[in-house]
Image (cartoon, rainbow over all chains, first blue to last red; front, top):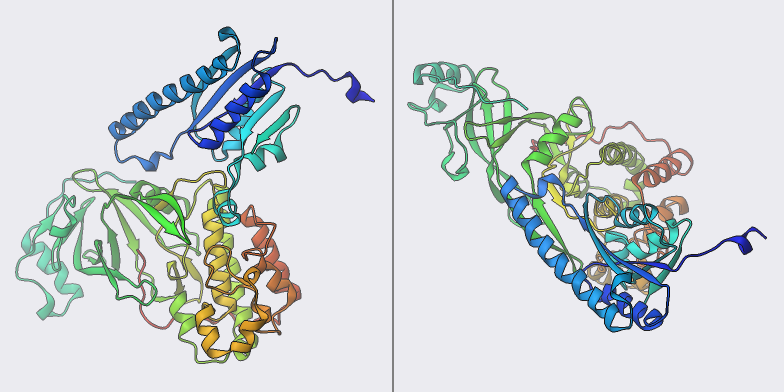
Length: 156
Length: 344
């Protein structure tokens, strides 16, 4: 029974965006694990870099990036504060934002995880209708289907 | 992409060239010449646009028909004549726009990009399934697309213009139509394999070439900000065209209620289009001679589906199987357009 030998660390990666379901995922982790020892949390936000065609000029792109950077910093700082208020030590909650071109956001999140030592990914469920899932796709579904060497929690 | 050269043409040169291709009464006495097309409203009939040293005589603005509405004038798209060769061309001047698109109650961010279209024109150069052309910067750096004129009609008009009942259409024309459509889907697969979206897949963005009957995609300057499925919206467009082709037009619930109320009783919500919930896609319930294999492809675009196409290659493969094993061989791929159409 090889699985009996497998060890799971207590590092939790929460992938967030600006949605309410992402906030619920952070809240869930806070409620479940806040105050427990040894857990480490990384709050990750991948900024999807638009196609180069999206911007008319370089200045427009720079402005977009600057605005986005500011929003993301506020978002991550807010989520971090939620976890600390739930009982996490300050030095055990870190944040990371990265700008990437993502044909698939799920793939980008999984690649970010592959570069870290986090055994568990937590995401919020978007609650898409079937037509939205067809047209836009579901990030959480794809993460569940494609994740390897880690556990995925999908927060409703 | 080429850089604009500073080359000027005298009025006499232009008149001489124009006289080669136009009737004497059509040759203007004086030409307004534009090397900067930033304000495309200023570029009018009988003006000359000089791009990379080549003079193009503008004839008129292009129009686009949108689902039974009056033709919409596209002021940034000019039908023109290349004065050096006499060839008809379409000039697409630079027009940026960003907007929220609404489809079946869903909202997503769309934009128009000359750079995207220029890139795709390079990619599909020589590909028979796409409009052809090249991009060239005007004197102000606006990326103008110079497109070959395609003689033919939009696929939408070809199908709705047929004077056939559905069963005759199914047996006589659909195998040929679907054969051509599969080629067109392979064209979209080619884009996707090269990490490009078409961006605005609609039945009036396929022109049926009058010379060889090929279906040719036009208008690649739209783009949308994808979420998880980068090609989901393109696939949705392909599904809509497929249902349109198999149904010999859109089968609208309201029309069906008037035309065939009994058929309506056989339908459930699951039989409707996943997004446009007034269109029937489970067409076998209306036309029982449609093979199950073909209907199964349609059902991937229905409200009742639990599985979606994730990649265009899956649709190509299923259409191939339908054509090979479930439809009679086409009676010649002769579904040619008759009238003039245009790209752009």
